[in-house]
Amino acid sequence: AGKSGGEFFTPQEVSELLAKIALHDQESINKVYDPCCGSGSLLLQFSKVLGDKNVSKGYFGQEINLTTYNLCRINMFLHDINYSKFHIAHGDTLLDPKHEDDEPFDAIVSNPPYSTKWVGDSSPILMNDERFSKAGALAPKNAADLAFTMHMLSYLSNSGTAAIVEFPGVLYRGGAEKKIREYLVKENFIDCVIALPDNLFFGTSIATCILVLKKNKKDDTTLFIDASKEFVKEGKKNKLKAHNREKILQTYIERKEIKHF
Image 1 (cartoon, helix red, strand yellow):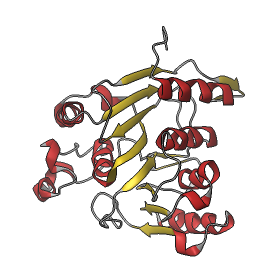
Image 2: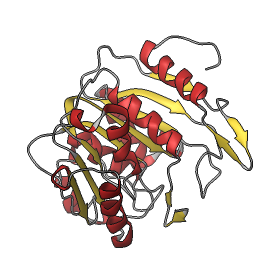
Image 3: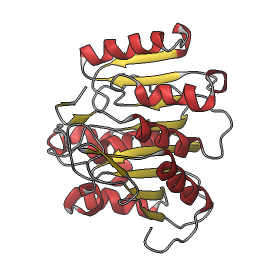
Image 4: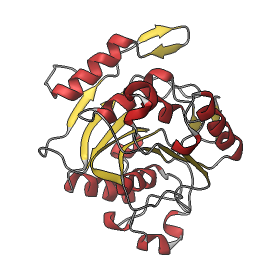
């Protein structure tokens, strides 16, 4: 499971960190969602970290690649997730979302494909889609990253947390992406930005970051954590070891100021 069409396999330790960030302050959740679920590794972390009984309504995902979608369903069975508790759909999340039910999600985690192409502003009808319309702009045709971000935000419950792996370009590129970013900041949805080390992911050496979104933040601050040096080198890859993950998680939870971190 390496690179396929802009998707990068999420290492186990990053999956665990995303789950623990999304679960901070939540002893149990209604359901967890990954709009680009791949083989389901991020969803399965919730069963591992929280215990299956504490995910009351189960695991929801959508995957565009048919082979990977089938793999995800098999993966759920292999991890003893009851058939009635996983809801994995096949299709294009941005243009044909399958989980638009009436109850938003308490936890959303994802490692969406980076800078993937989509119809974007060549389809003005998308500006009427309530997932995207509030920002007043559509993610550009050559970079759907923030379209996935807006999609997740619209599916998030008022008490929930979304933890999303992003390429850092979404933090500084101009144009429509700047407009969407300004919307996220103005509405106080960005809880935290965590810069991760480079060379963590299979298939790319580029440094990524984690964007943490909440709809009801306690205040209007955004925490920035520079964890780009928090790794142990193993072979050709960098690894987030238990002590690295713990430091990042505790800094996020306690929101403490640490020099150069």
